[in-house]
Image (cartoon, rainbow, N blue to C red; front, side, top):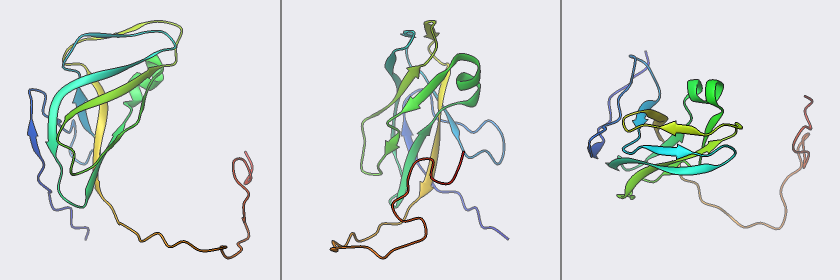
Amino acid sequence: MLDISSLKCEVSGEFVPVYSHPGDAGADLRSSVDILIPARGRQLVSTGICLKLPSGCVGLIWPRSGLAVKHSLDCGAGVIDSGYRGEIKVLLFNHSDQDYTIKQGDRVAQLIVQKFEKVDFIPVDSLDDTVRGGNGFGSTGQ
């Protein structure tokens, strides 16, 4: 059986992230301001919260599927390190031809907190060969 022990994350601010349903991976992040995301533009949206993530964990900001499908809104630059104590902001891109208004309290993104592994990066002169080799984008078909 999978152990899903709850980690603790201290939060300051009005809109504490919440999970909408049991078993959800992402907790909703809400806007602390009214803001316009211009057509084909981007805005940094304030959440008004600061986090103290557990050591060995990272916060990842992901888009909300409803905003992506219905309004072409997407997120960028979404890595929160455990040592960061500043306000969490969400970079929203509007890929549509219409302006989109975010109201204070609107859900704008999801926060996923996960454990991570650190690796030692070892400089070498060359790497071993594999079947894939250096084939990149589109190399495995459509």
